[in-house]
Length: 167
Image (cartoon, rainbow, N blue to C red):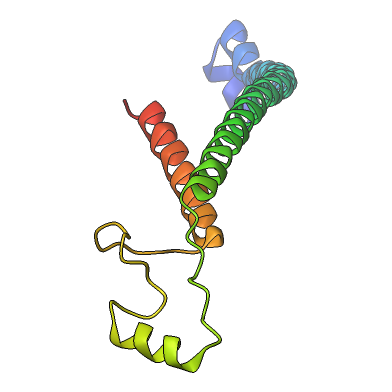
């Protein structure tokens, strides 16, 4: 068949037909090399980009940790300041409560040892309450006054704090 092809087809065309598969193979090989080089270059670019991303992420983490530490130090300073103000206000309130207790102390009336006087006293204006006592009132212990003072001071500081958050 080669002889018939040589007789029917001129020599340059015959040469082109014989060389075409080799030329196609060379073109396919060149394309494969090109796409392989491009894939390697893209992989390198992605690798470099990933390293840059990791570096940026590490830098952002450091910045975030520094910002958090700064915020925590500010919060700690404010907490110490608020606690100090509370302790000062509490001490002043307790001192005022002590003065109030001292000036408004009610001592129970002495119980008479004489049974006749005790009965007469019980039938009179009341047992152990002097006649010149102020209008009806409530007597509480000194411990209760201090507890109320502490609770009120705490509540006022909590109220001030709540107002400082959302004025």
